[in-house]
Image 1: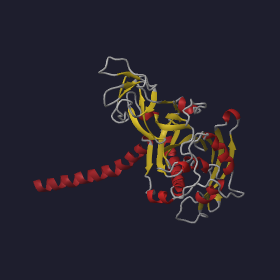
Image 2: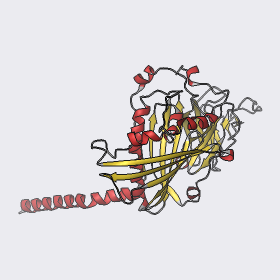
Image 3: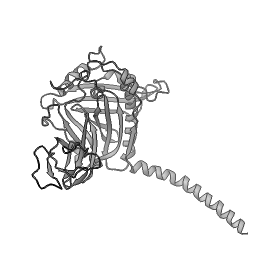
Image 4: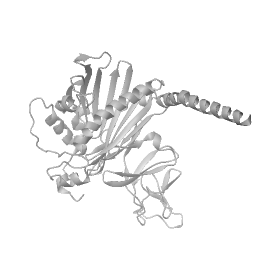
Length: 392
């Protein structure tokens, strides 16, 4: 009898577990879809050997002058610091207890410790992990714990201009170390909290920083590389139809440019209702792009950032923002997945191409030459061209 009861109990337990799995699994995935932001990371392809075989030519300076993304604001809490390897530099970003974010050169002027590694934040100062020297947001040493002598004037590190907007921390780079002469514009819906982050896609590419934003005015590639919806069936079955136009900024908006990109999904040559997108892409300086998307279900915005890590190595991020309403999260995730799927097609090209200073252009290529003239303002006389420094 006990054996029969045990067997019956075992069967009931198994049935209960199976039913629980069947019922709770979709509930869990629905909860994940509605609650968790998407964070997708595309690994860097092994292109080391190919990059060494690239022919050195007239490459633009590796690091244009302008604003570059450091990190998301939400990833740096009060009292936290982080090591940065960007723009060919070792830097450290920290947030004081007053909430102010600061970026300093990482190496302590005392004995050269990297303050981005295991450093701590004391009040509003960064404390070197080696001997406890403390540096404020200006880079000046304000405290040496074991010395009563006056602090030498040389006890300081470079402080980089910082701007925190649209949920991101940016740093201003200029080869002549001048102060910022233009600012990253606000996106009101993000600044006032109406829009929140619903996901991000990040990847590393082996290309010049300029080549990523140059994709916008390169109209011809849209209906070749990005026309098929999927690559494993004929494009005539299901495809994207693209159209784009480019307008550079002038006068006070000279550091911005605008690309209007229109997309229509077609199945067997027929437009799919509700699938059209009309994106007015705004290039912000050399390395930021704001992309408001007007969809039939509502408005979203995608921010693209290109941050040089070292020569011909870029960290590219796409962050999607939308209304707080929970049902927008799966919509934003879908948009980001579709966007990243298209972007990866470009990544494979960038990782295996050369930069041509004087490309052979024909009618229909789009305003690539016009874009390059506009982009050239982010280089100056002291900017070192890539072909002048191939030590990397």
